[in-house]
Image (cartoon, rainbow over all chains, first blue to last red; front, side, top):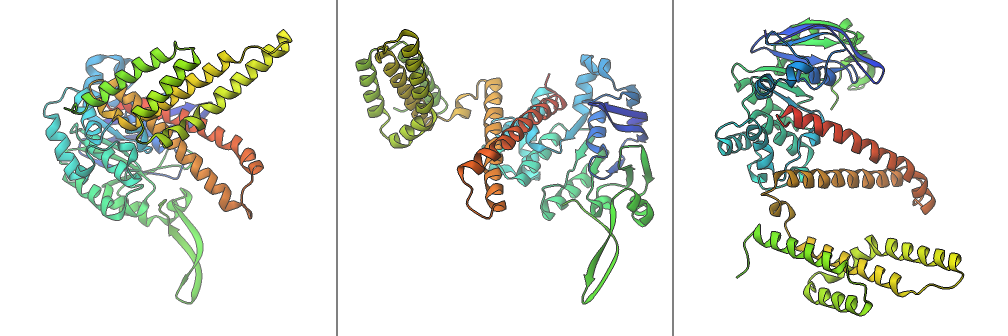
Length: 260
Length: 189
């Protein structure tokens, strides 16, 4: 088992963002984390990346408790940071190096990995950012920044990928590329947070739906089962009833909604 | 033979640091005038742009502070203080600002700092923050323009400035937190 979350609650600034979240992730699994804005998806990914810690309950990584003392231990921290990579929702936060090449090389250099130049060349090629290698990342467009950030986290060859709104800001071709890249990463575990419901089945084989107020998990199972459960989709805020037209016929029914 | 990059940029930055240090000790108006003339001659390419930037960024503050100090001394002493020190302070600021903007136009800062990764990263963070904040300020101005039935006047801009400033600070603080998290997440300690 890669992750085991047991009754995880997290309080920040006097507000409980997550309550009693319980699920586990096996090695090689592709899990899509769903929920409306503010349900705690980003917070949950930060918990899985050891950037935030549960107020109650436990998070285990590879059987080991993922808490502050564990990450203060140099050997574990090095192993964990070398195995787990997080794509931030705000990719601007991830881009702090003078050039795109340095950005992609940052992780491998920090971890002392071999073949840094080859890693940069390979992942820049995969995400089509080779022409920008000498440019400062902050000058790029939103979609280009996202592709650079993806190349940067994949350059360490992580065992676990945590992707926060991975397809946001990407055009359809780049989203399809990301799906292809994920499909080609054999044995890599991925937890992908999104509210892009139309891509759930492409991004993972299992869906975990968080309650709108972060109050636990509403659904945990195959994406097609979730997409068939209209009552649950409406209750979780992922589907709405609204009026629209089919030709000259106006009527109202439930619709799935993507954020983009 | 011209120096190759990043040596050329590094040499120019080192010369600039020496120049600024030396100028900061000059109080004689004639010496400052000579220094200003020499700087104009040396950096004549792009001089109007650098002069304009210096006039906008430095002169209002330097002139304002000098004037306020002069008036304060006039009130306290009851007699007009000599204008020389204030004139030389303003002239010195103007010459340093002109030289700085001229040098910045000529160096490739990121390349020059390449051998110093931490400094380079610090510069990138600063530039990225400036970039993000300028974007927000521009978008806010456009937002204001699109939501007003008339051309925004000074009063509209001043009224809106408070909210924009608060947003700028909030954005900066959030960015700083996110960047720290991202650096930790990617193995930086």
